Every structure is written in structure tokens, then in C-alpha cells.
Image 1 (cartoon, rainbow, N blue to C red):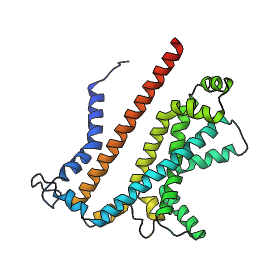
Image 2: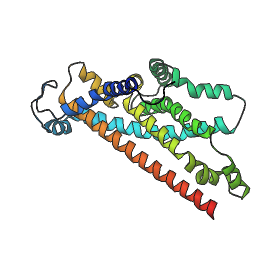
Image 3: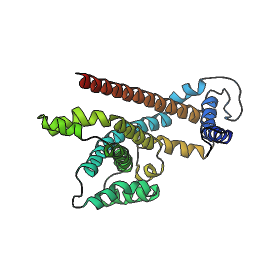
Image 4: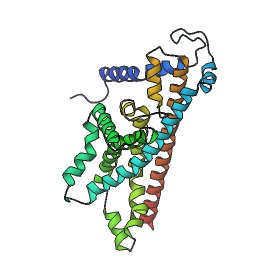
Length: 272
């Protein structure tokens, strides 16, 4: 069996990445188009970014989206990490099957069903739809993804380090923050980024659970695209791409530094 890269593999990879990223690249390029017609290049210009600042509807929607994405991913990371710890550390407890099924259900359930069920819940409890309902819906939707990512790390986690700390008199709560959390931090950060991206991109669930004053950016863009793509939409999408890219780079650098520091401490402990 022939190993290594072949021309077929290289061509498949190049075509696959081109299919994924060329449309994004074109969107970024045409956000600097001087023409209002997004398909006709008329020279380089940043006028649409300045026009975006004067578009109160898009700016308000972007601000709402970023707040919901940040807070929902933050809460989802905490709850998802706790759920992953419960599933990996407490063995077979009563109700484990039901608990794990409820955690994993949003992974396979269509977003339309999730959004509709949450809508019926909010209506049944007479909860006014708006910012908080979208926030709760996104926490429900993204928490399962964090749980899966963190659980995959905990399954291969060496518990001897925790047991050693406990034997030396370290309290369980302190052991988690001093030993466990630093070791699983890359998975926790990955779960946070995944939850942030999913919340930032969601359209279906937000459409069911939103209310007055809580229009997210995907909803605003979708409503405007039906009438035609405008240069302001290209500009705001480019800014979101830049924000996500910067956050991913920062998270990767922080995770790498934490991993290098942990490895240095382990080497120092072994030599000491």
C-alpha cells in the first residue's frame, strides 16, 4: 500500500480548501469595493466601513450578537465542564442514562425542533421573549458541545496526579483548580471557542426565541439579503471574521503558553 501524499490527495485538499475559503476571501475583498454593486469592482475604498458605523440597525444587531455569544459561551463552558466531570468521574449513578441523553440530545436534534420547543416553553411560563430568552436558548444549545470536547480530554486524563495531590492533603476544590483545570485547559478553551462560534452563527434558534430589541446579526443580515446584498453586509461580515480570527489566535497562544509552562514545571519536578 502506497503511503504519503499523492497528487490525488493534494488536489483534493486544495480543491476542498478553495471551496471553503475562496467565497470568504471574495467577501472580504468586495467589502473594500468602491461600487455599491457588490459584483462590480470599481476600485479600493473603505467608505462602506464608515457607512457601517452610521447604520444603527446593523451596529445594534452586532452588539447584541457579541454580548449573547460571549455570555452564553462563558456559561456554557462552566456548565459543560461540570457535566463532563460528572459523566467521567462519578461512574454509574442513578439517572446517568437520562442525564447523558439530555446532554447529548441537542447534538443530534434539528435546530428547528430545539427552537420551537424552547419557544413553547417560554410561552408556557409567560416569559417575555428578548435578550434573555435568546441567551438561555444559546446556553442550552452550546453546552452539549463543550461537554463533549471536555469529556474527550478527561477520558484520557491521568488521575494519578489528582490522587497524589489529595494524598498530600490538598482539598478537592483546590486540587481541581491547581491540577485538573490547568491540564484540561486546552479542551476548555476549545469548548469555549466552539460555543462562541456556534452562538455567533446561529439563526434558526434565535429566530424562534427572540423578541423586541433582541435582533441578532444573522437575523438582520438574512432579512436584508432577501432584498439584495449590500456593501455594508460585506463590511460587517469582514469585521466578524477578523474578530473571530483574533480571538482564536489569542486563545491558541494562551493555550500553548500554558502547555509549555506545565511541561516545564513537570520537568522541573522530575529533576528536582
